[in-house]
Image 1 (spheres, rainbow, N blue to C red):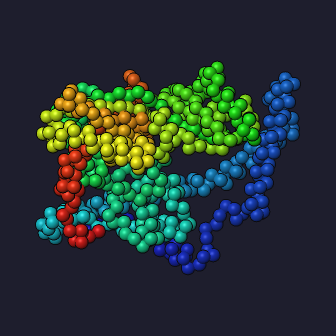
Image 2: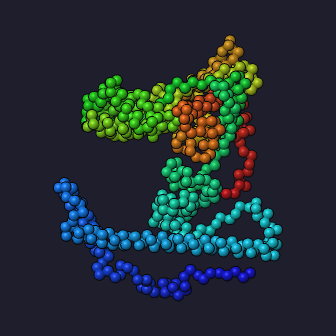
Image 3: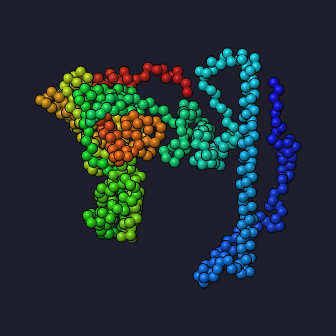
Length: 570
């Protein structure tokens, strides 16, 4: 095949000259300067700023004395000419590298584009040849095989080596390259070389790394796959919801689904949101406890609350300060702020409002020292009595009345057995264990699965799983009244992981994606109600499995793999 090629980009003699003798370089503009480069630059920098200052000073005097600005003296004329000359020098010196790099980059792009067009032409010609037609017979076989990993280019190889050596910080790859996928790929290869361990089982392709930049995760090298199952329909407040649950625990989705079936067959569940407020509690310090108590009295004064609320609410159009709870400890004062946060989970929103109030208070109390924006009286991502008693996030009660017939046919147990087990296990057993908010069978299982599927903060499962499960016989023992009380469900439908494609799809499945324009905060509150309703279903099913002695059997069926892991290759 006769294909004409263009001449190489650079003549061969140029390469020989540049590699054989390092002292031979093209002449530079700076070589003609009579003074050293740093001294010449320093002179022109000094001249530029000195003359600029002189002219501004002179023009200010003219304005004050009502002298026309166009009337200039000889010294001012010389200063103007010096300013122009120094500006031209600085622009030429510092702008030439940028222009050269821009021209070089444009020329390289043009050569690359021509290469690509030419290579496509060659491929099309090869396809028409008899050899190519013969080899295409075996093409369907390779379609089922994973393509081999492409070899890194020389540029990427140099970048990997620079990251491994520490010359280039791993965290700076995104800003340096401007390509988040490429940065993750280079970082991944560097990690494998540094550790000597393979990451072949960790996927890299198929993820939008740009979507997590500066928002969800730093220095990514891939993503973890977690299966998402569907439980439901959950009949809650007259509406049906298919609940997405991301989990690797077998039997969890099946068990929750059985609970949803029992609730549906009995007419559905009802939820009540009785409190909604996110909290943040900074800690401040004074020289004496007396001085700290003066701030305490100031914060407890109702007349001061309106002024503080106005300062706090400036942080966001959704932030609305509800209450301030100061608690002293010696000369330290812990101040717990609680506010509404719309459809956002609200930690950043309340933190900004708290920062505004602290700056305002320092005017009234200049000797106040802010030790930390969070003093653990909030209390975030830790089990705490203050959350269990006062609530944090959305406080929800969900209840249902399950008929005796459904308990026998669907749940395979009896009402007396469930009531007795709940009292002995969830209430008495948890009390003996010294549980804090853990008066339930497995609320954390359902909360974690929904949190991961919908982009919530998984660490907030700790307080969000605070739950007390109650079961009582009703209607003369014919039916069972079951309820879960969860005072700290911390969820949002905007911000954080809720904006990722997979998590956004799960929120959309529930009908709570994004913010509700008509009624702010209603989407987040509905999500909290769905979490509570799903916990109710999970509690009902697990307790029935324990009461009927089916727990071990069901886990052996759904939570045990018969796959021979010794045959699995990475």
